[in-house]
Image 1 (cartoon, helix red, strand yellow):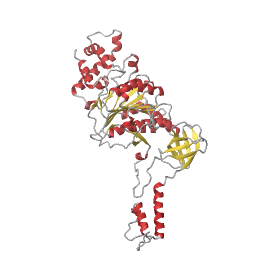
Image 2: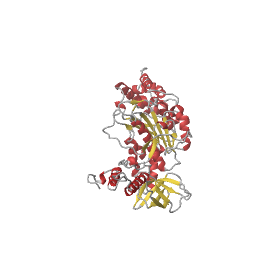
Image 3: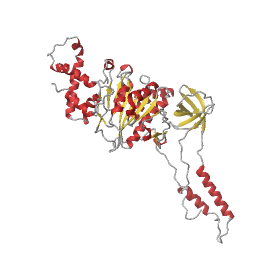
Image 4: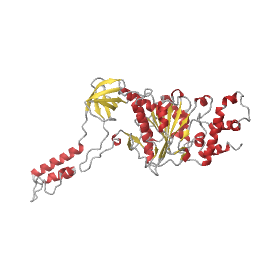
Length: 499
């Protein structure tokens, strides 16, 4: 080693090899003749340099030891949680899987597709992300954060107007998704002190929401309802008529038939043009259902980071929680509340908190999460947990739905927590007046229907009886009708012109 050389550990590979070469005779001697010994060494080191740049990553293998329901056990590998791997079936076809737990030297892995054809001792191969080849003189790209080492999926403008699955594969038969940007599924959390506050309202095109439950950019709302009361229709109306620049729809755990119906009949061509639909129906593995929800959120985060205002519609948060329950129970986690293990209630706020406003002056994600209320029980554990972590909730009533009242929004049980910071004092007074009269009529509905109420005994109820037909007309809206914020407020103020 030459005297003026630095420590080899502090040098790049090229500096190290050049310094190493300088200690040997040069191929050209002082009198200009070739030095065979030095030339052979130079050729040898050049070959070493070429071999180093072309070296591939070593692939590690384990073997399958057990399959128990949804979970498989593998030995011979040491992988962190969330790592991807492939199981080689008897026919040589790889089956993708993910590490969901471990115990001692055994890994618990869950497949993303059917496992037919697997046999005892099947090879389990590490499935690393593609890594650029090592170049001498360049520092390797290090990913220190766990989020950056996660699975990468495509994002970008090329996804607009497309229907894709939870792995980014197209479902609409429009050819491959041609995107150049990839992003990890687990986004980096935003410091709450750097988030922009909710200061601007978002027009969703639904009169009852715009006027009585005003939504702000970056707000996270829950849509609580039982089955068959119009959740999907209401989501489709918001996707078609919203003032947001981009809409991302996540259909998680729903029936496969509903995916096509939602896209073609509810969302429509106009709504799909500026939307991305991620579908993970009920017949896919619980792992893919979880991934579908994370992928939809990742796409929305990508557009938010570009300064765009995004509307994220997730149908449904309950199916997301059920998928996590399936995985947790399969690896042995004990159930605590109605069969839901603790990890379910830990993962729900993690995905919800990824939505919202970005940094000051940046974009936003306004999110609507549908919550399926089993048996119309508003005290369902998932519904109760969702109310605590969301910025408001809209309750759809089965009684209103059965009466042909669409959208079946129960304004008495619904609330928008950010509304008071978004609307004027005059609008707030009109909303309070509307709810007081509407609630007074609902409490006395039975007396009025049987003719037991004597007009004049309650002046406020008399006003409610007079205005109730106008209230009903105001709250109802056809699926093909768009009511922007200005029109909605105008109709709200005009309700009380007759008094």
